[in-house]
Image (cartoon, rainbow, N blue to C red; front, side, top):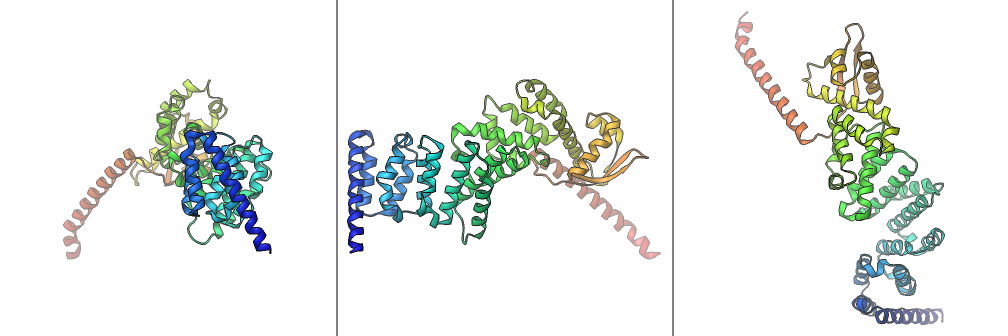
Length: 393
């Protein structure tokens, strides 16, 4: 009896869903092909193809206009959602939730998605959308719990998790770090987000702002002294092509090479229109000088790592009585290691933080390796020349 009732209910819901598609095809004749395809796939119970079709509709302009996706879900998709791929269903529901007019309705809609909670990937996706909506609403209290829960689910997942899930997690973590004003975590989560997200998957309207946020996080992050990886990413091309933020790429390149003059020029031009730079002037001034020192040490042969205070002052464009402060700051940040000799006014560097190298830096390293190889060959020849005399003695 119960089975019979269930079948009747499902049949009624199916009939209602098909009627809705017919009504929409009549009301929007330009979209008739989409509604007809949905109807045919549903009648033939081709769930995989139907799932694919629903995914395609997310990029159709008609369905991007509220409340078309939301209506399509509530009046059609909901009746057979159990037959769809849960991760794809979650993506569809997330897009539909964006068509709710207010925050509370959207959150209630996402909370009602019981069926996706049975799939760990789909659940993470929906929870990350909740985090994003909470951040937009300025309600950060529960974000940490949802992010921690998502990380736990991802760590426990057996098999290979879909890249789109990782993408949603790191995007939400990036936005949360931004809301909490933590540039170091912003930067690290942005790089991880980009590892799972092709640049063309980021909406065009959001690319420039995202690229700018990442570049500023890299500049003011207290633990970030490696810009090479970011500069190799396609996201920097967005800055290069931007009429508004092209200067940010120039600034990144100046920091990557420790070019103090370029930094000073850009700062002088942009500080008045970019309060963010003015607010961090003191730290940026120290950071560019530390990077200049790192580049200087890196470019010197390994047997010439003892540098005079006077040379550092000249190279780093700082007063000689401030050299020790710059070096101690570099030591405390863990980007350099060495010994300061106050008597002889020299600093011997024993280690430099590894960095992702650009093409010019790789060419420089190649040149030094060639010089080292020549020195080794010369030393070998000298040993061979005098080895006979040594053995004879």
